[in-house]
Image (cartoon, rainbow, N blue to C red; front, top):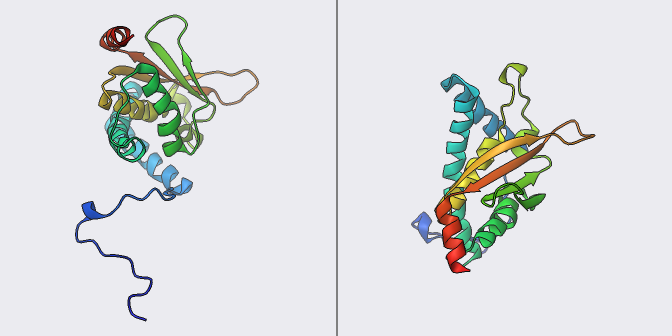
Length: 194
């Protein structure tokens, strides 16, 4: 029979429905593309700090788009207005969509009221990267820090987000911690909301 099993044709890509189906990218394809991103940016800079900044900028663009997509799909175009709500959204929903699982931990900083930390035992972007000794403390987690910053900025929670290695006793590889330091205006707004 003609037409059996055919899907409806859409003239415009924007008219297509957004499916919630399983949309995964091959891990090897991601690893290859990400390593190319790192290598390309490495040729464009003179130092590690600049390389991490460029990776963070690339991640920021991803984070802004992820926020738009997830707010549309998961929340019916609603956004979080509370600090703990957006942190929980990043820790669970965003992390699960990007990395296939919830982040290992979300903690409040003990030294400063405006600091929160998302920790990951083995961050996907650091899994297949071997850092030469001359690059010292280079952390590809800067890309993920950029994603988190893009999500937070887009939701109205400006913050400085950085990635750090934290050594763990008995393990060869250090844990990656994404440190989120919110702007003063976020804390003032949160206090006002009660």
